[in-house]
Amino acid sequence: MVGRARPIWLGSQMFKRHQCIVRNLKAAFVGPEKSDDVITPYVAFKARWSSTPTEFQVDWFLKTIGDRVPAKDIGSYLRSRRKMSDNASWSYNFGYAETEAN
Image 1: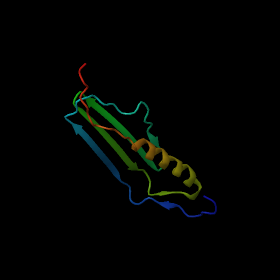
Image 2: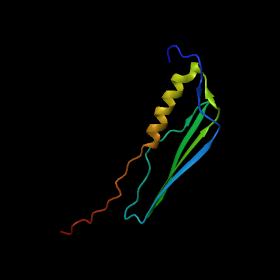
Image 3: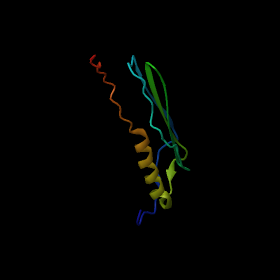
Image 4: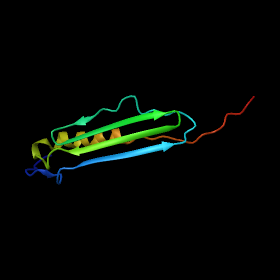
């Protein structure tokens, strides 16, 4: 950040977990092959998934480690935010269509 002298305030330290469970599936689903954890001195983000033949579960974990990001580290912090956004943007189509018998 050009010319920024003051840190970015992240707020009080926090830990958040978001869980999404889809049940009664007619097909097995898996998470992405690669979902890197994002660990910085200021924030940590992890995404985990599990599945059974009829259920798919995703858990996202976000933890702020400090309450601010120094001005000199804002560029790397913003890059880590983009990576967190990419790792949290999973898209699935749970629709099911019967196959036609020949």
